[in-house]
Length: 123
Figure 1 (spheres, one colour):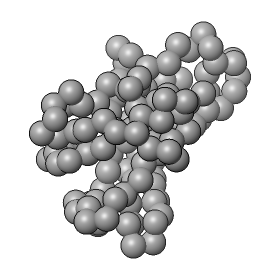
Figure 2 (cartoon, rainbow, N blue to C red; figure 1 turned 135 degrees about the horizontal axis):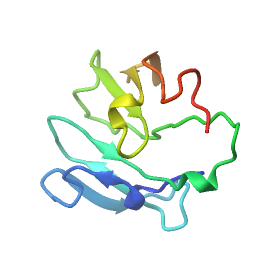
Figure 3 (cartoon, rainbow, N blue to C red; figure 1 turned 45 degrees about the vertical axis):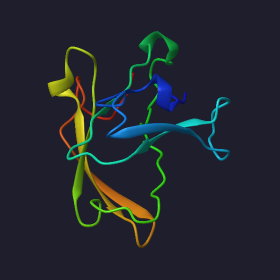
Figure 4 (tube, rainbow, N blue to C red; figure 1 turned 30 degrees about the horizontal axis):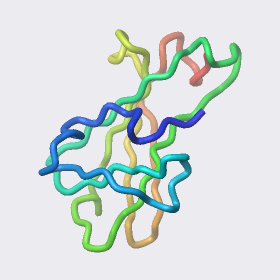
């Protein structure tokens, strides 16, 4: 299941000083619309999916797909905290720290904490 940019709750996403919405022919979504970041000091993106659409006993993963444009600054060497949880129980969710290496075009991550019920991210 994939969630397009317009279906995300992006902090300051409706403020033109920080974000702009543009078309990208390489987008995986029918509308081709993507959110382009101008500048922010911190980044918060939230998405909701209906858990009834998920299969019980199945392990799921969450990915944020993004493209770094030329002239970007700020990601190099900076840890990015990522949390997956349930609405109302966000503090119990699984937190990871990712490092984006723009030169290599790669990310690495490590996890801390467990989702409610412990173990893997199972629904």
